[in-house]
Length: 241
Image (tube, rainbow, N blue to C red):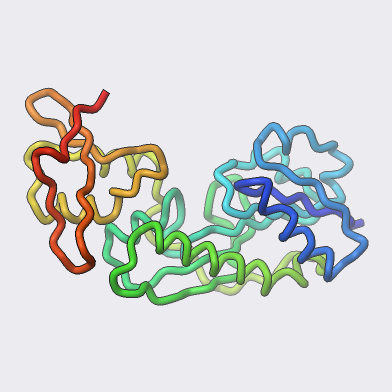
C-alpha cells in the first residue's frame, strides 16, 4: 500500500515546504527525508516497498538497488529542459546561446536523466540574463512544476503518464564543465568571451583558468555593464594554486 513519500532534496530547508504541499493533498502520507546517499541507504527495505521517491534539485545518484526496491516509483525534478540533460544545464545553455530553457520532471532510472518525461515547464530566456539568473529562473519553474504535479504525486499510486516528449542533446558532465573552464593559451577572443559569459560565476567550485607557458592562471572577471564587451586585463589574472 502506497503510504510514504521519500523526499531527496539538495538541502534540508526545501523539505518542509514540499512535504506540506503533498500532505495538503493526502493527509495520510508519511514522509522520510534525505539529502545524502547515506540518508537513503538508512531507510528500511519494508518502508521502500511502500514508498515513492521524489528527488528535487539533488546531485545524489540513486543506486539501482534502491530504485528497484521502491514500490511506487521514483521521479526526479531536473532544473533544465529535456534538451539539456546532465550536469549544470544552465551553464551549458548559456554557452550555447540558446533562447529557450525550462524545467523537467521524469521517472528515474539507473542512468541519470533518461527516464520517461512526465512534466515540462519551458520558458524564454530574457535578454541580458546571466547564468546565476537563469538558474534562479529554472528553480522557480521547477518549484511551479512540482506544485502543478503535487496532487498526482501524492494521490495517484500508479505510474504517472509519460508526455511523449523525449530527451535530446548531449548529457553533460562535471568533466565536460571542467574542460571548458580550462582554457588553452591560444584560445581566440570570441571563444574566450563565450566561456567567460557562461562559466565565470564560480559557485560550482570550478574556476575559469588559462595555461600560459606551463603556468596555470585563474581568471577573475571584471564587471561590465550589460551589453558591453567582456574584457580580461592582465591584472585580472591570478596565479592558480
